[in-house]
Length: 382
Image (spheres, rainbow, N blue to C red):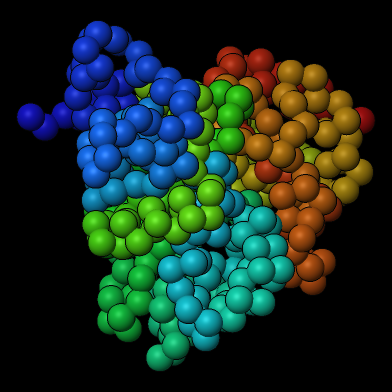
């Protein structure tokens, strides 16, 4: 029986859990190991929690159903998930990436993956012609964020999937900002989808996690072996927190993007604001592509103000809004990317991308939109 994404978020793939008790909440199997019935006969499915665990398996199956994936692996963080994905490649392989990436991903490339022999090519993936021009025989993957962090650039997923297929490469999409509720890259041709589950999937700022969703079952099995060999799989309790968070994903995403649009429209009218970056605004250069490939614009936005003094004043004076680095929770957060999320990006590259000392990023939460606007208004006043 086919189920809508809202129903899948609440129930996963099945209405009841087969633990013999018909519990409404998935049990937390807080155990390191599982008993063997006798010598030569291993447990049916579970051996050791680093390898697999019923709570984590239910979570992985739920996320697979949301993303339309053949399989999903749950990790202890989003960075652990991305690190494991790059273990699928060999020294000498080349990866074409969005030039506007989360700073932690850039640091991973610079500090570890280059040492491991991977080559990185940064391009403006919002322009498919530039992506194709960057492809070489050594290119084994295209890695994109859409919308990107923090500039909200939009990349055409289907166009990149076609380019990747033409050159025998994989397409990897970081879908953290929109979540599977609003965007499903595998349906558009992606091979691998990455999430920082800490953000919208968990949705409550109370746990760290990451996910890799794969279109190919064999590749998923390879990644599962990488995950438990690295020892970076998600704990049972954190898996349970993620299951609980996903149940409310649809209503949280709807409220967050409703608030984000209201705040983006208000910011546009403020004399101190020079530019608003929100993919839900018709004037955004990626508006049409995002509308084609997703079901919404999400709750993330950025904006540039008239000076660094104004930016610092806002950060200092907000009261309801919290000055913090994360995103995707119930609380609205504001971030200064130049020294927080993108501190590991060189000053030259930050300047080129527009991540200046007058640039701010916001994760819009679930509060009353007018209360958030009132807070921003008083914070902008000299």
